[in-house]
Image 1 (cartoon, rainbow, N blue to C red):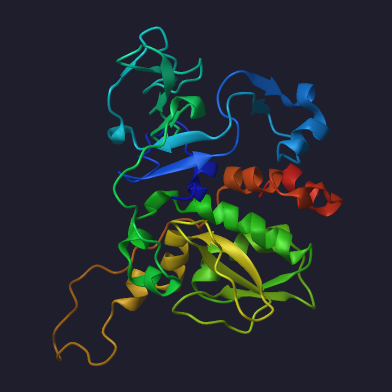
Image 2 (tube, rainbow, N blue to C red; image 1 turned 90 degrees about the horizontal axis):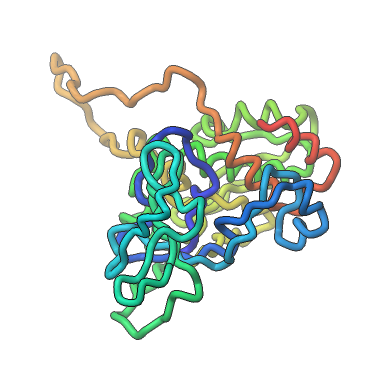
Length: 316
């Protein structure tokens, strides 16, 4: 499957669920693990060659293309007793690979389950050999996605992370100009953040939802899903700019459960009161993840433009 977008953010001192579903894997093209080098030592030119275009704290000089698996899918490996590095609730491989092959004893990767990190196993690329296996799941057509359970695995409290990623793409697509956000779920998700980051005034580009099962509204910018299996971005047929959104979050916006599961016609009999709970309402306005927003901007070449670098430096 494609590398999950929500890998770009976490919650500190919080235990996270597994990053991937059982029976799936993904490849992370970015270097991961020690040694770590500070930004001042690397410099802008080398960082840009590695796909990072704005200052961040440190960059990894570890291996690229680590293979990610759900921890429960691992077999015939054991923890290296001399590598117990972690913060407080688990291990994180910060000192190097902490998993070894039970047969030969060679390090093969790291199990990560500490607080503030997604639970995952990262296998060293040189330790992985691809062998024939059962047929992989067929790639779904776009038309199949809205009805497929893969979109409904529940972002719950983590939805602010893919929202921060989407916010970064919207800001870049807007080119520093004002954005008019379509009322409803899109405004609830990004309206306040965009109003704080971008100017207001005439010539605003309208932002709305588009995708399979929705069609294409009259908007200059459209939030569209990223295919969960291939990483492909749904493309509008008109001239709108496609802004990628992680598929589960897009489905949540496009087909909100609490707004689409009510009866279309009819009502309760006279004198009968509804006893199912009302949709939950948050105590505070929703805010996209600042960390995911900055993580995404740092990896977009446009962040080198002065207006966008100013936004990056102050966060969201």
